[in-house]
Each structure stands twice: as C-alpha cells, then as structure tokens.
Amino acid sequence: MRNSAWWLCALLWLTLPARGDEFRYVTEDGTQVTTRARLIGAGQGFQALERWDGQIQLVPTGAIQAREMVGDPDPIDVPGMQSLLTELFGEENVRFESRAPFLVSMVLDGALDRVGEQRCTQFIKKASTFMKNVDGVFLRFARSMKFPIRDLQFPLVLLIFESDDDFESYAQLATGGRGISAANIAGFYSILTNWLAVRMSTCDTFEVPLHEAIHQQMYNRVLQRLAPIPKWFDEGIATGFEANGQNINVHPVQVNSRYARQSQRLATGVDWRTIIADDQAFTADVLAGDAYTLAWCLHWMLVTQHEDAYQDYVAGLSQLTPLAELGNRERLQLFEETFGHSVREMQSGFGPAIELGIRRQKVDLRDPMRPGYVEQQQQLGAVQVKAVGNGQGLVGAEGRLKNISPLRSMTYYVTIETQGGQYADWVLPDVRPSQTVNLPPKIANHAIPGARTGPSTAFQVWIRSVAAESPTAEQWKDGRVPGPVTGR
Image 1 (cartoon, rainbow, N blue to C red):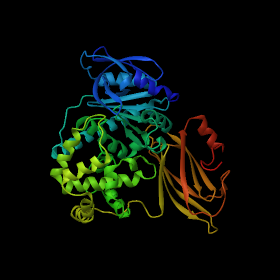
Image 2 (cartoon, rainbow, N blue to C red):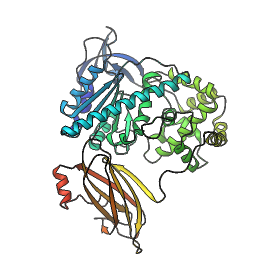
Image 3 (cartoon, one colour):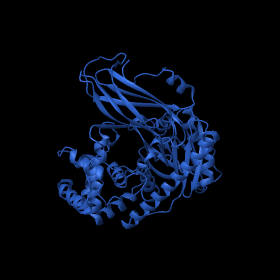
Image 4 (spheres, rainbow, N blue to C red):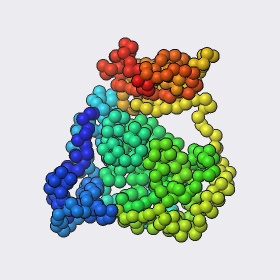
C-alpha cells in the first residue's frame, strides 16, 4: 500500500456522530472546524478533546470559538471501529479479527492469493488470541497490586503492518516525527490515537506487541492519557512483562534474565535520579537501550522491595490529569516522599536485591546468543551470521536467513558492509513462509561505491525483501541488485 500521506488528515476528519459536546475552533490555516467530543483536560496552552472513536485532538485554547454542551458522545464499538479502519486504509488493504475488547487489523502490502488469504486469517486469529492472553495476564497482576482499575471505554486496536515502509510512514505521521526516528521503531502505542501499531516482522516472537500492549492496557484501565506519567514508570512496567515469544510467562515481580544481564554491563556511575527526573534518555536513538534497562531495574526494585509504597505510587499516578505538568524536582520529590527513601538509597540496595532474586528464582543469566554470531531482523527476514576471515585482512560471513512473513514467499537480498568499505551480498529467491535457508560463506571483497577501503573486522548486516512473484524479485535473480546501503 502506498500514497499514505493522507492518513493523518483522515485520522482527524473522518465523519463524526450526531451526539456529544460541540466545539467550534479555527485551524492554523484559518479553516473553521466543528467537532463533537468530550473535554478531558486543559493545560500548556491546549485543550484535549476525546472523540467518539477514542482519539484525542489537541486544540490550542485560543483557537476554540464556541462550545455547546449537549452531552458526551457515544463511544465507538468494535463494528464501528472496523468501519473506520476500513475507510482509513481501504477495504482491499485491510483484514480483521475481532475478539472483544480487541480488534486486530492487518494492513497488507498488496493482494494475496487464496493460500495467502488463508494464512492471513490464521495469523490474525493467532494475534487476537495473543492479545486476549495479554489482557488476562495484565489484569491478574494489576489486581494483585491493587491497581485502581476502570472499565474499558473503547475497543483496543492492534494494527499490524506487513510493509516496513507503510509502518514507517504511519509512525512518522502518528508521532509527528518526535522521539526515536521511525526507522528505529519496531512498534508503538499512541496516546493520541489509542491504537497499538507494529511491524509484522515483530510478530515472529510477539515480544514487541506484548510490550506495547502493556502501555495500551495501562492507559485504558489505570492511567489518564496525556497525564505527566514519568517515562521510567511507563517503560519499567512494560519491560517487566517482556517474555520469551508468545508464551507470557513473566511478570514484573520476576527477574527478567535479559535485563538482569544487561544491568550488570551498565556503568555503575549511572544515577537513577537522571531517569526519574527527566524523560530525555528515552527519546534518543543512542541512549534509549540503556534507559529501558534502568527502567526495568528501578521498577523491579520497587514492586519487589517496596510493594505497599508502590501501590500508593501507582494510585497517585492514576490521579494525574491530562495536560497537567510535573516538573523534574516535583517528580523526584513525589518519588522520595512516596517510597520513604532517597533515590541513592534505592539504587545502592539494587545490587544485593537482584543477586538474591536471581538465586531464589534460579535465573540463568547466560546469553542465548551463540558466541561470535550477529542477529539482524529487517524487511521480514531474520538473519543469524558469524564472521569468517580469509587470512589477508578481509572479513566475511556465513549463516542463515528465516522468512518471518507468515503470508508470502519472499525473495531476499542480503549484504554485509564493512567499516573498511567492502561488501558481500546474497540473493535468496523464493523463500517460503517460516523457511530457513543458508547463507554460504562469502568474503566482503567488493568495494562500496564512494567509501574509503581498508582493513576492517566489523560489519553491518542489511536485509531487503520483495514478494517472490514480483518483477523486482526477477531482476534480483537476474543479477540486477540494488547493491550496498552505505557509501555513495
């Protein structure tokens, strides 16, 4: 699916129902707009209008000319949401599976044959079952922690994009280009649309959909959207549920082997107060990985060592209102007053606590990645390679690739590109869904156009793919390949 630049306008201008408080305001270009919505918050120069479909419009306060109080709009139901998404993405491009309160929507990259349609139906049923399981696991934890749980008002939407290009276009529009760049986002929950969107490739293990679904659960059942919730708490509770594949067998009280292992690699001088007071580290491409690990550490420490205060803290967060402000000092003060300890005391106690937790839960901290191997996942392909050398200063690789598209056979073009300006490439035609094929050993001895050449032992892996029956696939098989990504 292409020509997606109209999506953002469609999100804002789809037909609204006849009931609800009526607001009239003027846009930046002078257009007068009348909409029906519920006012859920005001502050920072904006008013937050929650529409009948669960989306929030932020309107500058000075732009609102009139409001007629005629009652809250009736919230959208699952059939209504399905109609909205059909209008937004096009009937030919979207497939649905409904299992209340969830609506799973697959946004396709093109027409499917009969077998592909059958695979698509099976896949979105699997995704729907997964989301329902998330619902149960989350609610059990929330009740055990005495969260202030409220009833759902809107269907919970999961958008799965088959095409990385379509996902990135949607992500750029939905986020306004703020935060981590779209190319580096695997999936996200939007507070404004209330929708969860992921790349289809992330559903090979469902790790990303699980993480983002916890955000969706928290903001629909516990927290207020657009409230000043610290990012460390947002990401701390979501990382606490991350598990092995679609088997949701981990929750925040348990030690997550990956984050526990990563916590040992972080510099001991990192101050927890940094992420408690400020969200900036979570929105930087370079720093986000460490910030997420610290968020897991902090959240695990609180939920296991300070359960009563943790429950009070969550209850307090649930009372924060949309568009309210909470400064850095206020965040630190709220934290230390609620937990009765300084952040430094908390941080100094983490090491002994996590070591005890690892022993009690018999957590295996060994890295499951085989030594010497590199993994990459792009464009519906998952590659695992290890470096090989030729004894003359050049590096190469060998390994395997898996087609992680559940829908189609794909043709892949894989390159390894060294810091020394050389590359090697493979064309892997007609790889069936879930099939794994070998990458035979190759040395990176082709010069990357525009790059300086020299010895190097480091390389990046790039994966590109097209449908196996496409004209581009035939070109690749004939040797007309796109070449390296870097250089030029």
